[in-house]
Length: 333
Length: 267
Image 1 (cartoon, each protein chain N blue to C red):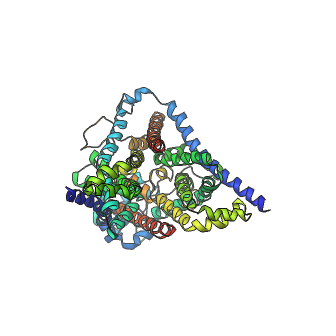
Image 2 (tube, each protein chain N blue to C red):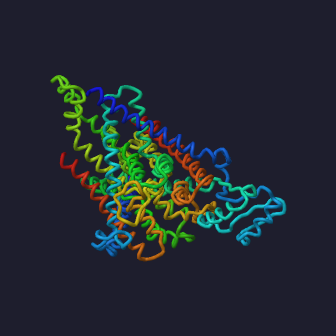
Image 3 (cartoon, one colour):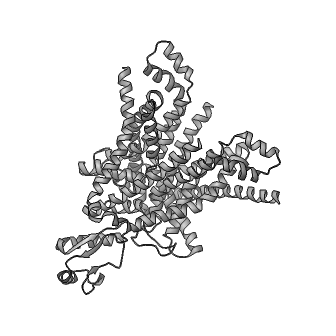
């Protein structure tokens, strides 16, 4: 019985290992066709679901006679079919139509640059927005507020963290984005509004773990400084911050890891179009949103390309989280 | 001057706390106004196809409940392994990997389950959704179990061993009992987290307009339906989405607060 229980607990623990390895292998093998097809250029290619005609002269005639006339732009020797409207639904329809034609004449190209850039930029905006506020909240909770106020504000902040992300998305789209768009101008669905809502979402998480880091500062150190006549600001700046610096950086990176993979809050707000943003208030797309919106309809190479994106996201967030957990937070202990 | 800087700094800090609270208040008030505005008790009696939410709420609980049935025993035994049996590097590795898995993007877990279950079985199903949620839950349960067991004093274990109890008896009857409240809280918080998840369910369980208890086909999910409804142009769909969001948030917050209340009473 003892042996059985021990084996059971060992196998449960090993399951974690197996699942993680399994995720990696599964994503890799599902992404394999796209990796073989596009290689590393995938990361730098801004075109998603774009028809490129291989056999130029004949293809030009064939495709032009199709229903897509007004959406086709042709060159003399290198024929490129481009649709003006980059909305995914339209592209998928077009994809279907073109699939019915002779396969050899054209092929669909998938590049991951737009969602990768979208993911990184929304995360960056979220970080810039959330960081100062989260630091302020953490200082407030750890050092300024009296015990009972700190307790209740702490719970309120943690409740904010418990609200499902889809709620942040809906609230962001219907109530927050219009205000932001009024102030900044531009679209309501954009890189900026998506990033800000994402910022609001990671705010409580960042504040809570930063507070925990700050709380590790020994009281003796703080009291010695106060005894020397230091103000609260000086104690925080010169004692608490240097002492818990590594832990705080770890907390920030961990929050960043969360933001990278967030789907629902961003899905409502980013606009979901495969176009590189030219300004901060342009709509674009991120990796999780590209997956959420296109997975259902995708097949073949398109689905494989989405898995390629998933693999990239998984590797990035794995690296970011490992960096936070094993370098900074371990060192902090 | 020093005192002036100090004052400004403190004011900024209080101000940021107020911003945090303001966002919480803003979201909750929005939910209350929009949600209660379209709330009706008939929502609990009708299915989505008749304009209600009954099938979705029951479906979401079944998905999260089944995920808990899978995730809690695996997570707890794995946590027990790390804390009680594991020696050296392997246990430490599992602890680290579980920490990473806790922050892994939920949509990637959805894609993983899609590839290993939805594709081979030929379609979305309640089982796939529950497994995706279970994968989200396992690392959280491991983390809680691990932390709570580490708080149990060594003497308790030694006393048990000294009485001649075998190790697994000591773990099940003494150590787990001592850590029960903490683990329960952790599990409730984990449950509150997965019941509000959308991304892992999008292409695993999907959702359904009809009442269903058949886990081998597309299964009604409250969160996925909120996403669908909120994106529809009709005002009535969006109102329904708000009502559903309100119900979801109230459920999540109640479960979350219950968890916190249990630990607080214990202290």
